[in-house]
Length: 225
Image 1 (tube, rainbow, N blue to C red):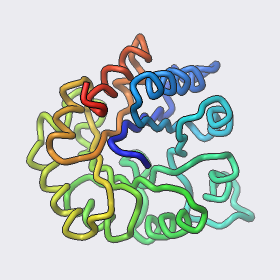
Image 2 (image 1 turned 60 degrees about the vertical axis):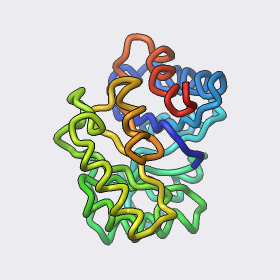
Image 3 (image 1 turned 30 degrees about the horizontal axis):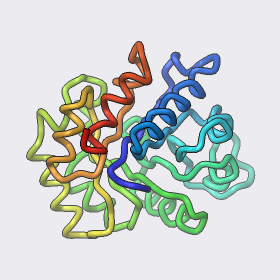
Image 4 (image 1 turned 180 degrees about the vertical axis):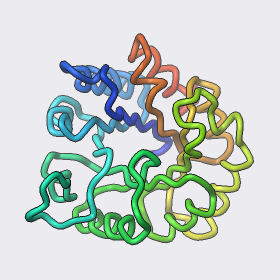
């Protein structure tokens, strides 16, 4: 993962249907190239390979299941994420919670598969615990702010700073990003100012009327513009 970074979690919004996921990924790729910014997209699993084949920027899976390949109806082992061409995986998002031992399993398995990992956590103590597992990055997202338009960097700056410090004490190699309610340029700039190396954004981009314009706005702070 190249930092500072903007990770676009597409979730499962209806805007992604009928080719929307690929169009959004292509808009992100265009902005990344024009600005020289690091942008990662995370489409729904059903579009994972399609998006990987359509763009040159990194593509993450939104989740994976802590199981080996086999008789696993409805499950998504990491090996299948890797085979689809993903560069990494988001783990333990507040909308897809996992037990600690399952998070540890996925982070460990991802390393053997050469997949990057972003472990989501709701607060500083959980972020520190996640950092002890040596993921690529920890994304601190207070669940009560997700999708509200009230950014964590604006409403809870002290929590962001506390998270950065807590993670550094445990493992200085783990990157810290933040999310929840990130809406505009100032939210991203503030997150970087507080010591993070990027943001995880969903609805502000996916539900925007003009994807390219909104991605450009949120990516500019990453390159000092």
